[in-house]
Image 1 (cartoon, rainbow, N blue to C red):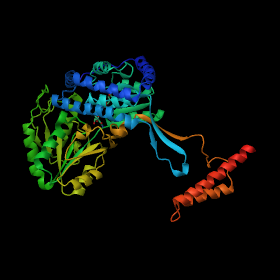
Image 2: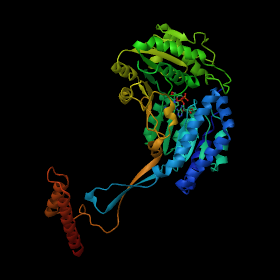
Image 3: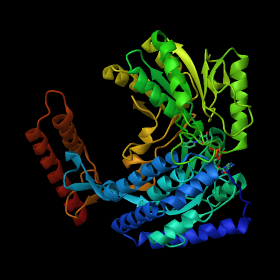
Image 4: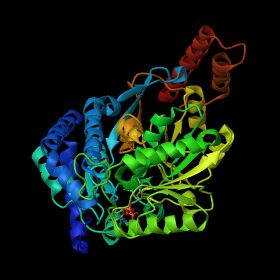
Amino acid sequence: MATSVTEPEPPAVTDVYDRAATAETAIGNLSLGDRCDLLGDLRLTIVEERDRILDAVQEETNMDRMNALVTMVAVLDHIRYLERNAESILGDETVNTPMTLMGKESRIYYEPLGTVLIIAPWNYPFYQAIIPITSAFVSGNAVVYKPSEHTPMEGLFESLFETAGFDDDWVQLVYGGGETGQRLLEGDPDKISFTGSTATGRQIASEAAESLTPVQLELGGNDPAIVFEDATIGRTARGIVWGAFTHSGQACIAVERLFVQASIAEEFAAELVAHVDQLEQDPSGGRGCDMGCMTTDFQVETVREHVEDAKAKGGTVLTGEDWDGESTEIPPIIIGEATEEMAVATDETFGPVLPIFEFESESEAIERANDTRYGLSASVWSGDTDRADRVARQIEAGSVCINDVIVNQGSPALPFGGTKDSGFGRYKGADGLKAFCETKSILADDDAGTNPYWYPHDEHKYELFEAVIESRFGQGHASLPRFMLAGLKLNRYTDSLHAESLRD
Ligand code: NAD
């Protein structure tokens, strides 16, 4: 069951940033290759220590063992992706320089930001820690990591990083709740990577605005799944059941709203119920079971409120009617005849509740799926892959799965993040890695070429610049030889002006 920790005293938090500042230098002395090697050692440590990690995850979250295990696969794939790609993504880049700046070179360097503060939620405490920590570290940053007070897994990460060969200060763990999070924000990190609720994210963004600290927000979701009549019914129902009930629905990209085309709605609902009837729920989350139970009491309360609300507004409970409204062992609850006035439609339930809405046309499905303040992720299910792609493009979300669900999280080259009230910024993929860097642009000359932009200016130089514009960019007149000639004349004239001004 979820545990909790006491808030540390303020001086402890100040000390964290002093140590991180020292770590920044030490990490800066490591090459990108060295940092990738360390990640390789971390990967091996995780594989070696997997049972201890999975025990800790289960102990604190109550998730089933299989879910904890498959989440670990996504973590390991992410680390391997960084090992193989970080050097090419973050290595110095030479980019195109326009011919109007001939003789110069344009380069991009990806430099560490300094110290990155990562604040995490309670639902996937291993995944939510390792993914951003490794991304920030391989980019050359010192890391301060605050897990949720509900799933701190105290001591676990320290021992994993130590075994993998990390120095103590490179990745520091700070335990505590919102108060500690606040103090860490006031410690002036160089970037904040926050994953959690929209309400807290909003507060953090407004505080970060005061100090102009870059912030990345991975917030709540209310993901739609759209099922068209040409989808393979049995397969799709199996996917939706998993997408809605894995980790008892406590995944930010769990299916929270199911839109089914009216022509198959009855058959599809029956298929969902049949699959749910086969699920095995085990509070101890044994290796072969399908579901464990809820992590926190407050989330159980949210589920109870949403189910009560749905019933009061005319919803029919197709599965899970026997839940007493209190036990953390909430069975999968499917709600038929759902309407958009219900809390299950408007708010994030973050529990094993699946409301079904019926639609007639493609445009109606898109409009209703987008009728939410959230925009984290979505799934589209159809045998017509052109249609699925067309719909995916119109969904307002950071990610869309086609004929699958949630597994976008397992593809480490895909950037992940949301839009609307689900936040902004991306982590994972090349974009996500660069997000932990300062992008520095270099424009370099070899100290030989002339620069007509420099003083002195005069009327003739103006005319020569006009000739450059016409020959390079003008309609019908642009041609390379004319441009080269115009450029040559301009450069020669500039050289003569510079030589003259030196003589003066
Ligand atoms: P939460 O916002 O209550 O807490 C998240 C973290 O913020 C915790 O570590 C908490 O201690 C800290 N915190 C709370 N108040 C703070 C403050 N004022 N200043 C600094 N830190 C503070 O969220 P939660 O209940 O832990 O997580 C559940 C939410 O997270 C859900 O909405 C879920 O959708 C979302 N989530 C999003 C993603 C994503 O990638 N978008 C992933 C997982 C979970």
